[in-house]
Length: 425
Image (cartoon, rainbow, N blue to C red):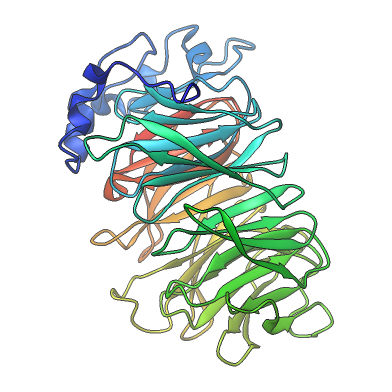
């Protein structure tokens, strides 16, 4: 496939064994390629910021001799404009990023090398995502296209081919793969939600029930249901086999009124959804009862809740759980859902918007990493609210982030046009 350019196989010998890479392996692989990378030991040394001009390598524009501290372990500067989305392969050191330059890229987080340029969009690529088995990658764009690429062969992960283009949405707002199968869900700004079967590309369902842009959506972790929500403040619970809602909550339901929904997350037991609103409200919804069972009041009124993330502090999905909500007020609030009370508040110093929240996988399931418009990411202990590590190197807001390699690395998507890779600990 002409679009599937891939580097010389010698660059990817480490991929062939499909070995699980540790954090130490990543650090050992690094070479100084002129991007002014820092050794991890220099991480906390404020004096060892980038040399003059180094910020150009991070996509930053050197104005007024601003020097950005950089403790990343790898750079990916190939996008020529803002990077809107990034996701990580379930097991391999491969990131998928999408940007304002209308391209997606698969690239190796160990060496920053392009594996495949994901072409074919005519507008910004705003979503990327790997299927649960890592064999398929999807890109979604403002052009309404969803394009699917597939790994070739079983020897390594360096050759991918274009599979199919899915059409239907007017503008793709988000993409989610089924937690186990090759089924893809997409929300559109035209109020529709689309469900496709892969590799055939057949449309399984078009859900029509929203009245505004569908801003967020998730499969329940058990894979049996779908939750979607829109800018008009409506939440809908779907059975994938039926075009009719199981239940619907809207702004006319007094207890649910959020003005508009901006974020949502479903707990591991698939029994609760936590929904964040455009004016700072947070609601806890029972998916079995179809009703609001709690309201969490911790964000500044008028500041939208941009991210919601369940954290499995107890392990094995036990108990009602703990959820973190992040807002444009710069706060991430940690909530105990058994009491509906605030456990701790995490704050980025500049009080700039929290743009992403990532829960680390077991055995480090007490860790959470936040990304912010303040140009940093931070890794925290969700049990205590203690800041463990600050990740710096961007010269603009963080627009997206993803954890990879068992949570040992976080990859960021920057408004500065660069993706950076950080060791989370």
